[in-house]
Image (cartoon, rainbow, N blue to C red; front, side, top):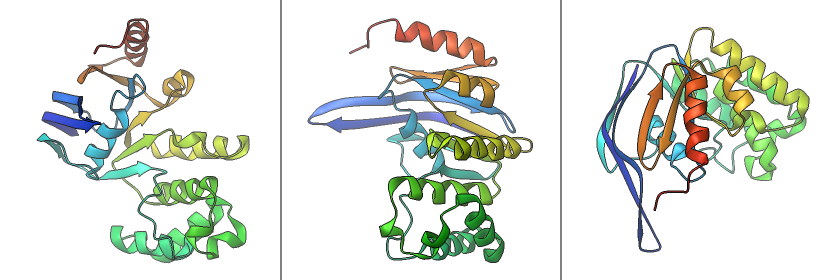
Length: 222
């Protein structure tokens, strides 16, 4: 279970105030995959980062009774001068996972070949995402935070990524952000719509998609 309690987040961009979360109160149930929908710039990724603990809310708090992943596929915390293998071992130590197991899993999954043993700074953006996704799937969490991760790589890698994610969903929950409504329907059963700083939860993903599409048909609120 993840509970948002009076959660607010405000940014100031070029002197203008932008509210992406306005006193949110909501509960994401244990073991349920929730599709998070909203316009571009609505604050979906910001909300995921707050839930992950990598961004602080302006006020309010987030309470959970289980383990929560970092945003799946996020490569921003990898050290540029360490190899893919060394970065993987570091994550394993942080999360208490057997390092040999995780290195073996990520090396096979990410399909980086010799690059797995080269420094992270030499990686292309696609290689970085492959490494990050492999590490994310190699560590077990109660809830996975997913932000457009399966858009990385060729068709075969996308299919493999989605398959392993769906396998994880057999005994875990997720909060999923993607622009693909087809993918949202495959990955989520519940939905949450973020619009003008307000969050509305729906027990049925189809109801959430309908609400989101209705929002998209209206002008953006100033």
